[in-house]
Amino acid sequence: MKFRFLFILFFGVGVFAQQLDDTNAIEVNFLRGNILPHSPELYHLITGHPEGIMLSFSRKTYGKEAWQSLYNYPDYGGYFIYQDFKNEMLGKNYAVGAHYNFYFLKRHLMFKIGQGLAMTTRAYDRETNSKNRAFGSKYMGNTNFMLNYRKDRIIGSLGIDAGFFFTHYSNGRFKSPNSGINTYGLNLGVHYDFEKQPQYVVLDSVASSMKYSESIKFNLVLRSGFNESYVIGSGQKPFYHFGAYADKRLNRKSAIQAGFDLFATTSIKEFIRYRSIAYPEEHLDPNTDYKRVGFFIGHELFINRLSIETQLGYYIYRPFELDTPIYDRLGMKYYWYKNVYSALSVKTHGFLAEALELGIGIRI
Image (cartoon, rainbow, N blue to C red; front, side):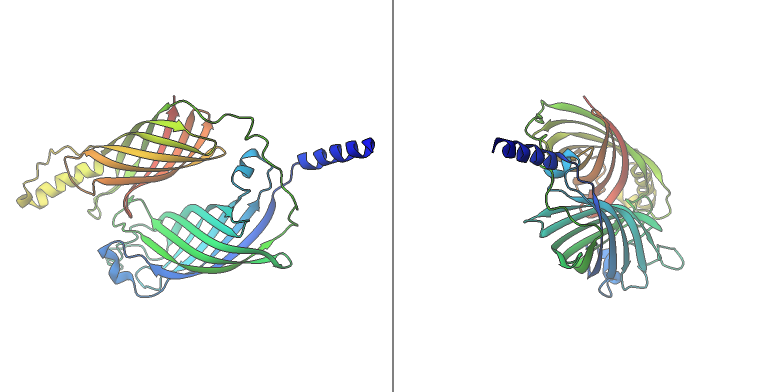
């Protein structure tokens, strides 16, 4: 009896401790929906219901790394999107990128988030496509969200998906015009698992042994890039966005932030000069300070070395009132070391993008 107990104990520990390799899966979703008219410049571009296909290749996780169990064993991988906007001026878009699938409700509810690059077949052109104020450049960024009901292995390894999607295309005002396009609607699809799914997963033994709550830390970050003012053809100008903020790590997943931004966006400097000459009746001083200072609060969601950052800010210094006083930022950070990271983010005013920011930061 004792021997049987020891055999079961050691056999159980051995099975439980083994590392389960990731498996592969593919999913195909048909998309059909509507364009979200977030700007008056878009109304004449809405002539039909956009349709498309989203093809995703995923690696399914089972706890090989500690972070995977924390997020209920998500999928990660790449995607391809084809989308027809049913409008001659908008044409069609193609996009590729990376995605995560997160699961809830006993893995029947799936939330997909994806980020990548897109190409349009019908960008703005002064002579041949002057009414397309959505895509000022042929290449742009792409962001996707999808919320699906999922049922696995209905017929063999084949399952079904159905739910809602949201897609966003914008070049971050790297080139004007750039109203961007947001579409939303319904999706229906199938998915296929190439390997047999394990009947068990590795529980997270790290969570109880590591402390994630930390004292307040300070961050310094420089974000830069190029953008263009609202004046089409005015050219790309560099911007320099400096951030100084404090963060407080609450737990293994989350940290909250509060701090200040200094925006030195030289395209605004050129725009002020242009307005002062083109519209003398406004009596705008061409030497008006183009810089802005904002106060923001934010949240950071940690996924292994990668994190997702969301911030909401308000300009406390803004001599030239170009956009709304409220701004937001959505981005990703990658920690090369514990206190050094790079960042990619989009700064917007509502649905209108101002800048695609590349950054580097240090956490003290």
